[in-house]
Image 1 (cartoon, rainbow, N blue to C red):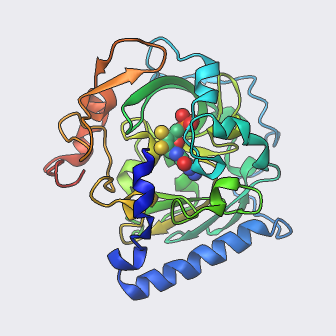
Image 2 (image 1 turned 30 degrees about the horizontal axis):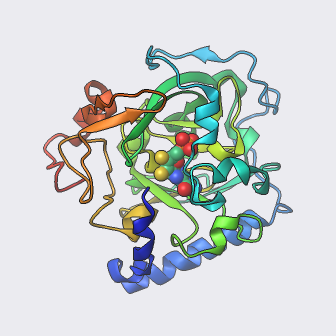
Length: 318
Ligand code: MTE
């Protein structure tokens, strides 16, 4: 993301959301944050504990959804990052990675579902479900990488929380911990970072919750211990270090849309035909390559996901 947007953080969510919803949402955020901070609260067990709780990464399955393109080197994936909680420059997240404390980690689940609660990470990420998913990541800033993630299908996890028929969307929050996360001491975004998907997008088999890359645990700067990966959308949708998941009836607020609604839409599907107001999205630079390459609609995943948006004007719903 380009920092010029930071000037717009004073576009308050109350300007774009009905005031009552805004106040309720703030209450929810405060509650979820304080609950996330209270590690003393016993977390629930979602699945019967038939497997080791440790994610040992030893028997990761290959996925049919992987691309066979050349991988971006580990070094580039882990030293050129966007993670504003750990700083604004691309090298900051690696330098400040030690400020993020990832063990123990639990996730609060709430909203329109039959199994709300506070869950240990190890209770819903089962080792037997771990897959390697090699995906292209296309950042809205027009660079891209090819990353061998390790993760599980998001839809399979969400189903276990039993969303009700009112769950039309799902929202995610990153932890809020300004004492430890240097980036959160500055009002660059309306913290905590939050993202959202329509429920059918979230249930699409391409969506994963990643816990690793290159066969090992996620480095902190890449969103440890748990992050979203939505390969057909601009990278900012793939929220890092998730502490809360909320099923909602209405379209939820998302961080970059709050910061600059004209520049960052809710959908944010990779689309070479819809330019960002300040730069073109037609091409991208693959990290490590000299020449730019053409950006593909839906980041090259159109065959799998275009159907989700049938009949929608993608220039309007950008
Ligand atoms: N999640 C949080 N919590 N904070 C962030 O600043 N940046 C987003 C996304 N998820 C971000 C985040 C952006 S802009 C991108 S491009 C990707 O993470 C980058 O992921 P990577 O650093 O693993 O390549």
